[in-house]
Length: 145
Image (cartoon, rainbow, N blue to C red; front, side, top):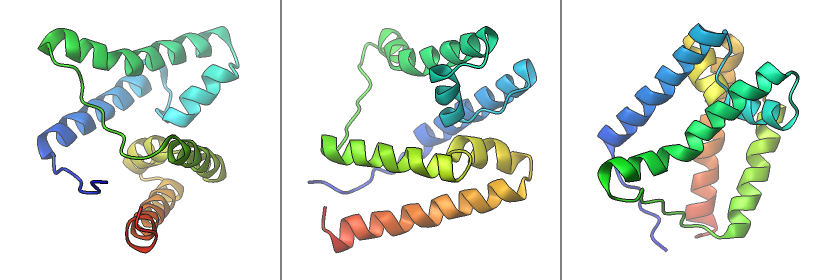
């Protein structure tokens, strides 16, 4: 299994700019913080019809973006997931648990909370980053996966 990570500064910068722009537009347009976990949770358990609609539109945009890339470039988006289905399910459960425990996810705390200089979000994001580094080290170098 190839565990190398590609260095893609321009693609990463573009993605970061789009995430930041979407967060600003959501805050300016609806006064809402863009936390992907909260958006998905609110879609699954809607508080109101208005809340359901904007969440559905946002999620639809996330899901259809690769199709738009394909239609505009003629090349499919290359998505390589170099782990097993079990690892994906386990990772998803851990992320969900962590987002519930941390009262938010990396987009809510890392993008929006830190931009508002929230101390809680700064601590949460630092915790996410340390936990990520430790997890990658253990999985790649201790377990050899």
